[in-house]
Length: 333
Image (tube, rainbow, N blue to C red; front, top):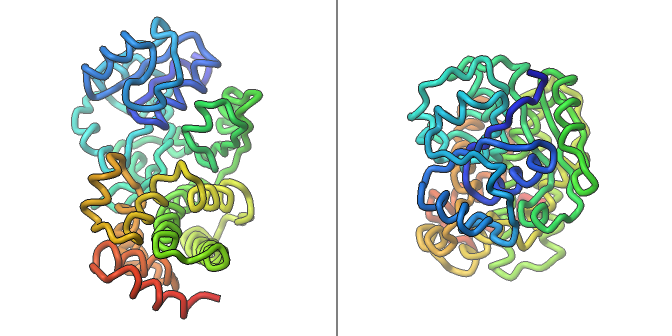
């Protein structure tokens, strides 16, 4: 079958729902794995996801829902993973099907906890997915705005530039613009780090730092991100000002839809980490990313990353945000 063939979506959250909307505009039907049967039943009855993006309506007759992961995988040629990164391994424990012949597209802007692996590395090393069959969707694109048909830009990355180009052209529409790159590693790490920096921006907002300081913080975060990804993958020549890097950092640091910024704001206002997580009822990927990135950098790369270190000290070292951010201000220019 010609690529992308039958699409299977793994995940039931807001980004998975937005991606389903994008894909269903281009194909007759999709397979969709969700963990909970009650959510599927409500979705079929209501015509929309009962828990996320509930104003986005679907023709449920075009969706093959299933709680059986292996069934969705067997019946799909291309699999789009859009689960929160902390839950990915939990879902994959059910896996009995082979992924080697599938095209895997990661829409997960996170990192695998404990393994400290970006998604492309994880699927390649753990499930033998060839690099040319591993793709990444990234860019400054909140699910809520996709649902509202607001103009959004996505970057598709793959070791096979031709495969990335085919998929990018396939999903493009009046409201979805696409570009391609081979910088899989750089894009994945930038997608992980921008969540950490959005938490920092939120903390500063909660502490009532103003726009002047936020501009300094985000510009320093951009430099910190560039130092790290250039160290990890210096062979690839990239322009850090492109939307998939800088644009994603900006929207995640400033948008009202950013759950990482929201999480940080709560911490800056005095919430404990545990209470902030409970109150949000959503996953802030940056919480897990902070620990993973700190461990990766300390163990291997030793890049100067004062913002990452500050967020780590607040989240895991239990340092008061006001104290840690005051110390951070001395390291920014």
